Image 1 (cartoon, one colour):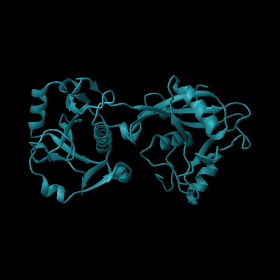
Image 2 (cartoon, one colour):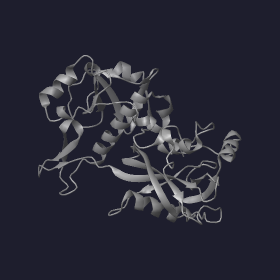
Image 3 (tube, one colour):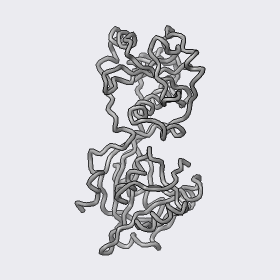
Image 4 (spheres, rainbow, N blue to C red):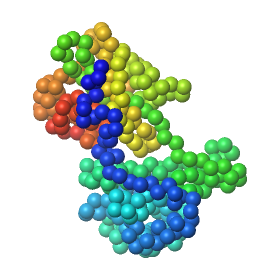
Length: 325
């Protein structure tokens, strides 16, 4: 079905959160002298991240010169679109302790989780904040070697941890997950989308279906399994739409559109599992717009790939209140 993926959202599309370019400067990670020079550059910018929260000021994401950065675990994020080096520092991590005093600016700043601040950040800021949170959270969860239990230390500018007893390097892991908007096109002229509500979400919040890829499973197999498990619908056509890093805590969302198999695109075919999914419905465009306007349906946040999948099918921006949980 060649028109399954709407033109603005075909392969190669990047969600808002990954639209801003960031050169990760891989060639610097093993070069201590180059890293030191990058840190000492007056144009270098430093983000402060602690326990999954990013420091903010009145302009948005707090950016400190390296001379004012707090002591802590130092991570290279890369170079921004202007060629400036960007680092992140976790003040409660391990790492260099030669940073300058940033107490005045830090004292006047505030912090928030990505969910809390995403709507206030420009695309560049959001890209870098997601990158920084993902790395600092990984370091926080892996102080010891998973093989021998010995202590580890950061290396490669924060992209690995070395086991001190064994010398092995361990790298951040990303968990692949699929996220899918299922479409009903069984009848001529039919074009409905299946949205569902998780048990933990507030009343009215509907979104796409999603789940993790299991060992030995392709993304497409995981998609079909998750849809069948959660809402009882079978799919027979899928098309890849794009991907999005999702550091909650460490996932890569692989986004798809899918078409329900014959006989599955009916109201009666939708059977929520009652555990994870408590409600699932087919929406046409007019019905979704009306329920959004009335506040009866809450949309996924603008940050999420789920929002962009629904907007790709809908044909424009969704107008309504959004909800994270």
